Length: 263
Length: 258
Image 1 (spheres, rainbow over the protein chains, first blue to last red):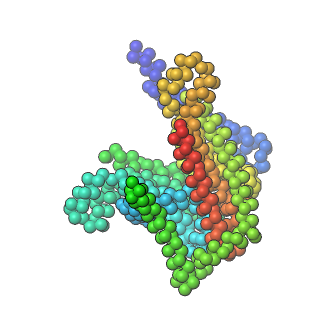
Image 2 (image 1 turned 30 degrees about the horizontal axis):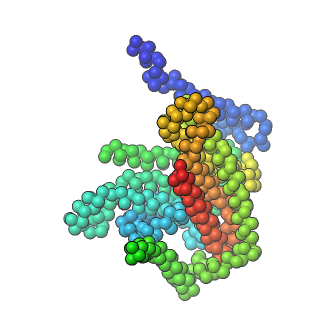
Image 3 (image 1 turned 45 degrees about the horizontal axis):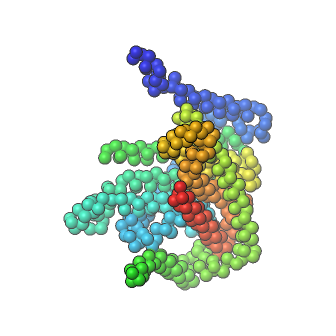
């Protein structure tokens, strides 16, 4: 009886025989096959959809070149500095707004409504302020991630257990001590959530700025491959870029999840 | 009673006055800082020059027509987003195995930096409005699909049971019970989709220097028209805030009505 039950229950059958997994494999195979058919069919202009073989060869060649890692490092560095600056400012503003009702009522709506504006339109201003070098890309990353982090931290501040704040005050903690000993430890989850959101938009802001005006970075390589119509290279760079975005997002997600499990 | 309402009005007005007053003070400080050389006048335009540039934007740069171009692209993209997103959501709701296999993919697609695909779309569609509309469509599709699925899945069981007790057909059950019940959540998705689409549309217009408001900012900055660039950025922010506020009000109205 037990054997029959095991065979009937898909979750107990091997993962590859699971109907959901089988459907996923079918969809992936169908997409790859459709791609190859379009690649060899001649329906689109030549090379607009190159074969997977050429894309994988280009990806391998890209990953084996030292030059690529120079550009990758430039992008990662710009994103990291942008996230650090925008995140620190967002954290400070979020704590201020979340900790003071009047400030929140007076200024938080500005952040709330400015948040969904397309940040790339500030790029000409950033060029005037910080030049055409990496500074303007870092600034784009900082502006992009400032809003989600500030709003997330402000919301997190309001969720802190009042008992914890009263305990801090009863111990006569200074403002700095309140921030480091009470506010930040109590707001780990919203901060990590804000950083997760902020990282995604900082990556977009930095890379879009690189595609617009730059001489280094993965965004620059992508727009160069577009300008030279090297489509296999463009596809391989986009694969690297999406892998980078998913990888960074997963790392912060893992941190957030392990923090949640610990509590 | 009158004293209470007066104090309530005063307490509600105070934050608004502080917010707007601080903004005005900031602009006055900026004006003097630029005029007296504390801030580089080639980096920041004096606010009075920005205000003066607005009539020029309408008279010489035809910002009204540019706005209509962007609005047209946003409307077309939103219609496609609503049509395909809602259909995909309904399909995933109806075919359970498809939902189990692809829901995480759709969620990952919603979080992916799809705007970075714009060079690919340029190659496929060319440097024209189709690329911009498609970029808007791609940005808005996943949120509408996910919210439609959520809305349909969270329909109260009792409503569905009432429908079944009236012997409604599957078609009638969907149109009379499931869809009306899911409509407020679907609208949240459509609103998110519209906002994402608009962000991508203006962004791509700026990046490829084609179309409406985004391209206008790019052109003005390339001409080193500092006051005009700042004025155009302010105009885009105003439009973006107004769209966001209007759709938010509509969402609140629909949610309260539902």
